[in-house]
Length: 125
Image (tube, rainbow, N blue to C red; front, side, top):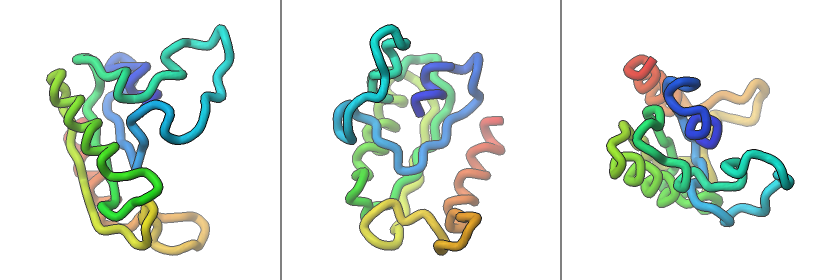
């Protein structure tokens, strides 16, 4: 989300977030140093503006690592400023993101998540 929001519509046509955090300070400290672009130490929620690219937020309803309320709040914030934003909630396996079919390499998202992302990208690209 950060890259898409910082680059805006001129640099990004759409954003897909998979269980992404939207608020600042919830998941560890910043790795950025003095002199870096100050937006890099912001949270996605703080970077939303009317020129943001369309967003699809996917999130497991039972994710306890990054709560689904993060994605719900991000979509609401995008819509408040007039941006296109969708949410795809699903019942993932376990109590974290629940996005992988199995642990074989290469990792593959569950088909229903891939399908939601594909449909979104076909609309926005």
